[in-house]
Amino acid sequence: MIAAARWISVLGHPFVTSLVLVTAVALRLSTPGDAIKSLLLVALIAIVPITLLIRRQVRAGAWTTVDASHRSERPILFRVGLLALAGLLVAAYVARSASFLTRGAIGVMAMLATCAIATQWIKLSLHMAFASLAATTLLLLHSPAGWALLCALPFLGWSRLALKRHSLLEVVLGSLAGVVFGYAIYRL
Image (tube, rainbow, N blue to C red; front, side):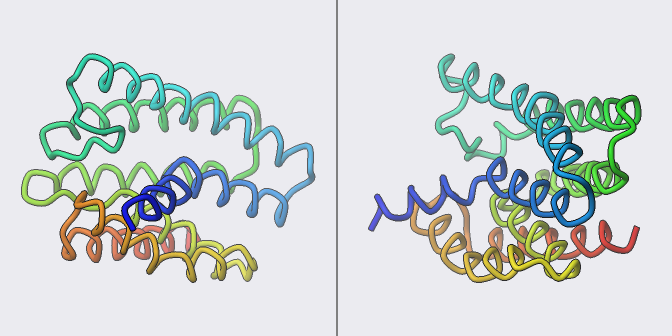
């Protein structure tokens, strides 16, 4: 069971759900060339720096898992994530990338800032927040990928509980944060 939970957690990682969201929206709202440009911007400017941070923190023994599983491990994750998203906003502006990328970056920045503030009291599940944000946004855009993510949410929630990375409240509140900010992205 734990092996299955790990695989589900990897497949539902915020990097994966973010790329699913960007790909599905870009293919729906822009040309394939713009979709590739958007994916490259997100990967290079947002995902690579966070990946390097994770690698450094785990290798140095500063984090117990790649998920920044303890509240004390989260502040640097939020700082680097917010800086990376700010860089993505600048790059999207310079590259004159699609407006959905700008809206998405702003929405995710707001969600991360909210989660960062909440971390003083509770460690919201970022896996659930990102997956719920992606599912909500895609469902509101009538994308079939939204339905796939929606169906995956209970399994992802189970995996976070089975791996003992979060409490039920943290999973539920992470999901709610994703829904709220996914709706906000759509309404922008």
